[in-house]
Image (cartoon, rainbow, N blue to C red):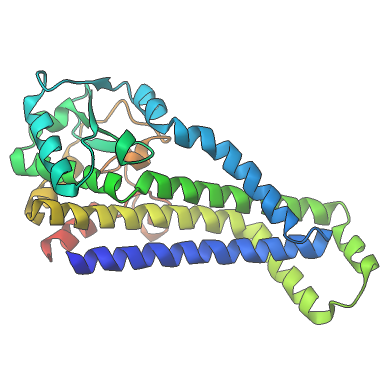
Length: 298
C-alpha cells in the first residue's frame, strides 16, 4: 500500500513537471515573438486563473445540482452515515456531508474544495447492491480523494491547461499578424538559438493544447490509482474495494444523472468505456481491470 501511494505521488509530480516545462517553452516563444517576455505568461495565468476561480469555489454546489443529488440525514440512511463517519475518523478529516442520487446504477463521487467543505455522494443503487466491506471500500476511495486534495489538484491542472491554450493561441495569432517580421526587424542578435527556440515554440503552440489535455487526463488517472491505494490503507482490506469496482463495472444500468462534465468525478466512469490504447489516452479513469489487479497485489 505504501509503495503504491509513493509511486503514484511521484508520477503525479512528474506529470506536473511536464506541464511546467511546456508552459516555459510556450512563454519563451511568445516572448521571442512579441517582446513581452514573461508578461505574456503572467497575463495568461491571470485570465485562466480568474475563469477557474468561480468554478472551483462553487464546484460542489454546481456538481450536486447537475447530478440532482439530495442531502440525507443519519435517520434516513444510518448505514451510510455510520460508514462515512468511521472512515472520516480513520482518515483524520472532518466528516463530509452525505448526498444521495436516486438512481439504480451503482456509483459514487466526492467533491468540495477542501476537507472542511467536502461532500460524498452515492447512488441508491450503490447502497442496494454493495455489502458492508464493498461500501466501505467505495467510501474510503472517495474519502481519499478528499484527504489528498484531488479537487484542488484537478483545478490546478485545468488552470495550467488554460494557460497553455491561451499562450498557444496568442503565438499562432502573433505569427498570423506578422510577429515573425517584428522579431526580425528588432534585431538579429538572438541568432540560431532564438530561431531554434521559435521553431520549438511553434511546434508546441500547435500541439500544446492536445498535449496539455492528455497530461490533465493522465493526472486524473494517477489520482484514481492513488485513491485506490489510500482506500486500501484506510480499510486495511483491499479485496473490498476490488469487489466493489468489479460490481460497478459489470453493472449494465446507465447512470442517468451523469454526463461528460461530471463523469471524471465518479469512482468508475459512468459513460461507455472506450476500448483500445489510443482511446485510453483520452479516458479520465484507468481501466478497471488494472485497478483491480493493483489492489489484488497489495
